[in-house]
Amino acid sequence: MPGPRGRALLYQAVRNVTAAPAQAEVLSRVLALSRAAGRADIAVRVFGPELAAIAATPALAWFAPQAGAALYAGGARDAAARWYAIARQDPDAVTRQLPAAG
Picture 1: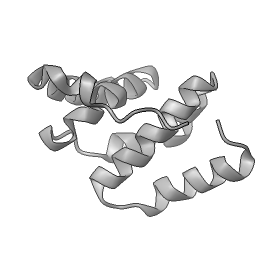
Picture 2: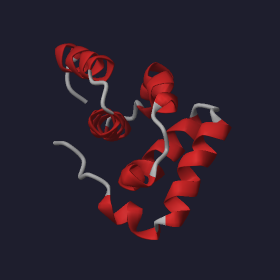
Picture 3: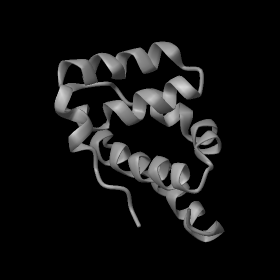
Picture 4: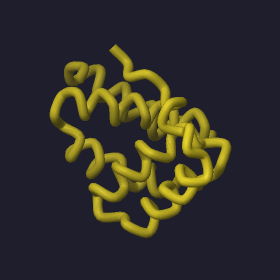
């Protein structure tokens, strides 16, 4: 996970990007970096509202497994279920996830 400045920039990026595909890309990076640093729980608490606000659509199937898992971990079971439904419709979604930054 980047230092405090890097985390602040990622936080601003998530908040400033409004297009769902771009927001999903930034959140994907944030979640991957947080998971690698052992801080996924913090990222889910901080970015849970942004994750829940992104509509689960087939165009974002690549993000579905990651979004579903994060939302489920954060207690947003209904939002997670919508993402898992997208993932089930596209079984190859897991293989198309963006590679972790780093």
